[in-house]
Length: 197
Image 1: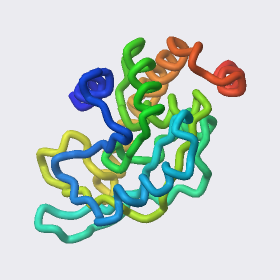
Image 2 (image 1 turned 90 degrees about the horizontal axis):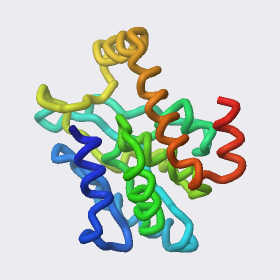
Image 3 (image 1 turned 180 degrees about the vertical axis):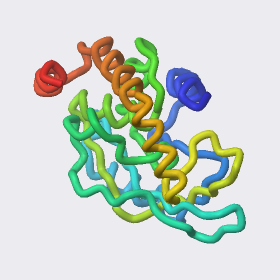
């Protein structure tokens, strides 16, 4: 699946770059998607893991925009990452330090959702995450998507059913196991917070 694909790419030492942008074959990137992320990352110390993400606009197969991902109000943080993923993987760009961190952490554990895992491990290790409230990616919704957008009422009810059947709890358990396996990468504050969770 997509998590295994992500793992294989993120740990591959033959792939070297200053920045890494996640994508999906159904994406249409806004013209300033990469520029916005790189401009922000260049203001940071390159040794600090950094992740840029944004909202997503969802469109039909014919290109009509039908909605946007939620506009999250809480600032990105490890505490927030424990309970919520704020960005689809197709909106994420990371720097080299974040890639190295994710490669190390991902080789020690399994995870269900690569975007949520990236948010968790970057914030847990003291990295910086920037959430841009603008939709910088348009995601084409169709019947063959592995994971669809949650903009329609039908999709929201489907997500609620998944939650009630324990799907969210399973994802959270995987995340917690992954963080425990990577305790050596966590900041003191993140480790203490994880201990209370």
